[in-house]
Amino acid sequence: MALFNVQPKKSPSKNKDNGNSFIQPGQYTDEELPIAELIQRRRLQMLIHSKLYYDMDTNLITDKQFDEWGRELVQLQRNNPDIAKRICFAEAFKDWDASTGAFLPLQDPWVVRKAQQLLNIAGQKGVIDNIEYKKIQQSAGVKSSKKPKRKKATKQRGNALF
Image (cartoon, rainbow, N blue to C red):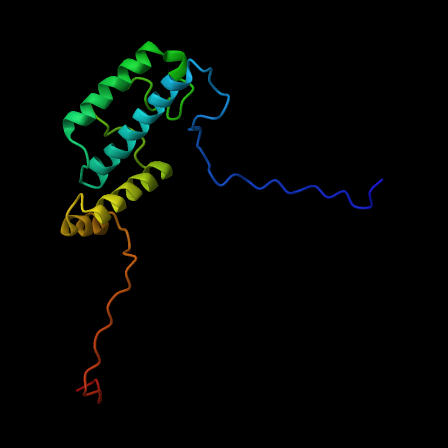
């Protein structure tokens, strides 16, 4: 018998999925997996690009591309309902018809974070111009990572009251 029976503490998961878990190993058969991955990819694309469009007032893809992805997702979900209901954001996309992304869960923390990351990459790579990028950052309430410039000290530092 051991003097001390030490069990490692189970740390709580940092990724709270709010019922929106992503595909896990072994969750799907080899035949189902490519379909599940595509449904998941399209759902996440619809969420992130809807967040950018409706909440951040910008877009990184064309309306045509959004419509194509949306129609493809609707068809995939219609043809594979048993797979679709087991993939992240199933409830949000249950009756989704691809006509708009405005009513999707755009405030989900994962969606917000990924949209911001994508926007940051687009700004860094020059996909959107610098002025537009700064405007979006300000409207989204994102603080710049750059340090603010300090005002130069004036030569006269006398009494500030006069």
